[in-house]
Image 1 (cartoon, rainbow, N blue to C red):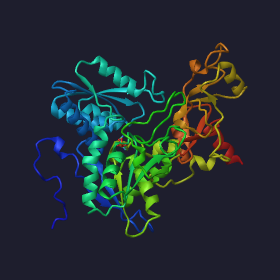
Image 2: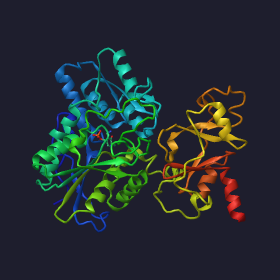
Image 3: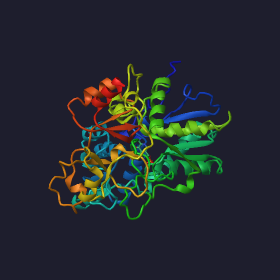
Length: 469
Ligand code: PMP
């Protein structure tokens, strides 16, 4: 007995055949006093590194069969990275060219991986309404129209996406648990995974399996206001200027029995624990899904079996969820214990749920001047109809007396933006923050768990004040 399973030792004809048949791994240490069994389905073991290989293959085969994609053709997709990666790998093996449109906030690692597979990567700025010409989907559709022989995969509305999970992910989980699975938990991006797998498991169990979605707190799927968040590739963002909010056709909400809403900080805390206590290095959306699975499992008994999907690996996010500089700058939990004071320790009197003193992006120059008064620069933030804490990523730039000098009073403030103010987070070690912001004079935004909670005159000044008190 070597203890090594025989998965993947077969001889395969192509990379496509290596997709699927991923293992379930039991969580043993992070479960604390949970009595139910929790298994994680390790989708990062797919050859393209994520659960999206399954949808990519399903969509590609359907397009070939329908004659929409022909030899020498080009595959186009709008993707937060993983679907693009799955398509790029499969397309490379079949002789197609691949063009992937990604939002600019996607991790640098994912963009590098796409290029490594020979894909052409187009970046689009984030925070655009769906019908905006710079929105991900609009750019992908324009490129599809321009490139001869191009086929748009369209994972959000392509029935082959959920169908791939109904044909593979669902049956695998049913077989692997010998039909004992009682709860299925997955994040919702396009909805393909939860819809296809959930439909299969419900049919196989005569409706007994409960299907639970894991969603970022502010995502619209779980009832949030659509404000942006930091865990990539799950949830549904709603730009305030969106005329009609349309959900993907790949998502069938009627399959879902309940949604657990998970804050970014909770997802990140779970990720760090899973890496250190279970030996699994997982991507951000796995943190969201496993946090939801653990919350669900806490309410269950010893006979219950929870299966949760871990869509990809932490290797694609070493610059984010496992990088203390990125985490600290946003006020998220760090991977390591801090020696010495943090920014949160020295910037006193913070109301961590306060609305930020800021200029909304819809203001005119005259209105911005009133808000500024004789004070220092203020952040300009994406205007929203609902109130609530500003996410750091919603900061579009800054305004000050200098940036507005000579600007016509009726101009939109957006036409006179300065660079965004630098930010530091409550969890960042003070020494690190002082070094990082050393070249900067003027106001600094303080972040706590991804939200901008205050603007202070300057970090060095605040620290000195604190020391003389
Ligand atoms: N997690 C990651 C890392 C993903 O790339 C995706 C796909 N966008 C999801 C979760 C969500 O999967 P689905 O699109 O099937 O809902």
